[in-house]
Length: 435
Image (cartoon, rainbow, N blue to C red; front, side, top):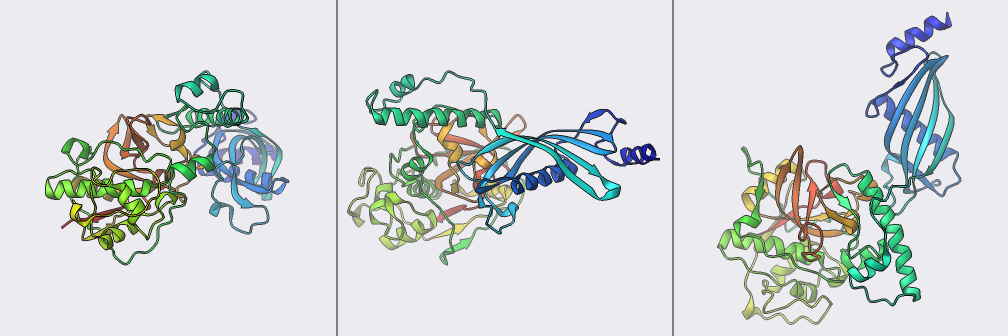
């Protein structure tokens, strides 16, 4: 009788293909995801860790029909920002930027007819990547012209940070969903907090601005690829230095494009004017393009780089209205739908966006599509500019102009998978309006 029940269950469970034998299952299927989330709950309930962990992905699932069904699973979990005393639902908890990432082997026993599901065994260990390149801090120190003295406390501290970061970069490369690679960059000896403080805009939380209107999205077919760099609407890549003024570069980049398209004249506009004279934003301590548009209209326009050069530090406003090169008359919010974004961009120009820059710290090239644990889409901290889009093989991507110099990334640009809301790039899309 028991064998007949087991045979019946085998016929109705999608994973099961042979009686008593172990068969491979679908890691993307709803059953695997449900079992994995059940396992994560069990792990959290039995853990003494302060923070709760959350499922990242199912690596493997195998099944065996015995007295019920045994599931053997390998899953990856990562710590969230929610403590075990936090009452929030786990699905609402964001992954922690520097939280623990573990590979867990789980054995789950399920008897459907008894409404029984239990974790029989679970073993978790830190996820360790295979580092595919030689890690040599002394060579790194020389390659990027770092100034701390060999053997000093600062040198030793930076070396420890670098080694940890190289392990993280290797992990990101190993589990990259696109084609990107991660490794040594100028920022590889910086902690996450240092990197955020000096090279991003801190926390960029979109807020209501009554001046902003909703952009009209063009209808009809759009080109398969489009690049405003080839149409004279994008200035060369700039470098913000160790000042959190990315918001200003995102803003000027957008207005440079709008002016070039409408007036047929490309100016390289002054970010320093915004750092010094925009009293809504916070200069090197961060800001928002949406606020910068309002400030530009209050100030009376933007000068160009030649008349108001970039210094990369907060300074006294020295705006000269007689040197104004461009004015704007308003600004718009652009749809978060990436199809709408592409349609708007192809007709109207580059788009100012916010993005989570975590993965950018170690980005070296390729189309980036990192796990959310490396790139929280609900935590924007960097202002950049979408200047175009394309498709390579089966992977659609955005072309994003950054402000860390032409030696970073792909000659100063970041190629990011298009269509998945990667790193939150679709959640704060704006543009100035030029009359």
